[in-house]
Image 1 (tube, rainbow, N blue to C red):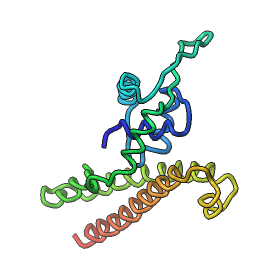
Image 2: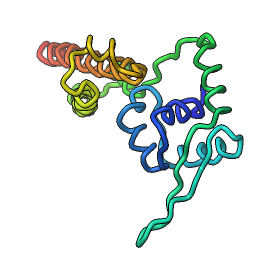
Image 3: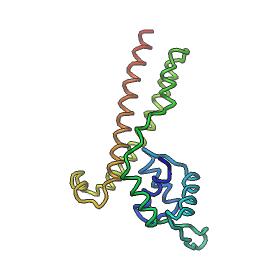
Image 4: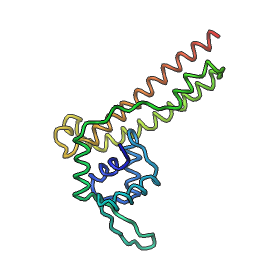
Length: 189
C-alpha cells in the first residue's frame, strides 16, 4: 500500500488543507501509517495531477494563500476499489528497539542502557495512548462505544483508532515485562 490511499481515506472526512491533513495524520492515522508533512505535500501534488483530488486556492489576508483539497469521484472510485480488494499480506513489525534488545546481552550492553531505552519507549507509548484516548472521547462525544458504533455515519476511523489504542497498550505491557526481567537479571548478576 502507498501513502496515496491513506491520503484519499483522510479526505473522506471532507475538504482539508495540507496543514490540516498533516494534523489528521498525526492524530488519527499515525498509529498505522505515519507520514511527514513533506511526504504529504508531495503526495497531494501527485494525486491532484492524477485527477484523484482537486485543489482550490483560498486567498488569505496577511498570510500566504492556502490550497484546499477534496476527493474527486475518480479518487473515491480508486479508494473504493482499493478498500474492496483483499490485503496483499500482513505487515511485519520493523522496530529498531527490538533489534537492540535482541542484541544487548550478546554484545555486552549495560542493562541500565537497555532499561533507559525501554523507559523511553514507555514514555512515547503513554503519550500516544493519551492522545488516542482524547481522540476517542472526542469521537464518542458522550455516547457509549456501542451507541457510536451503531449510530455514527462512519465508523472506520474509530475502528482504526481502536487498533492504535490496543497497539500502545500492548507496547506498555511488553515494556513493563521487559523491565521486570532486566531488573531481575541485574539483581542476580
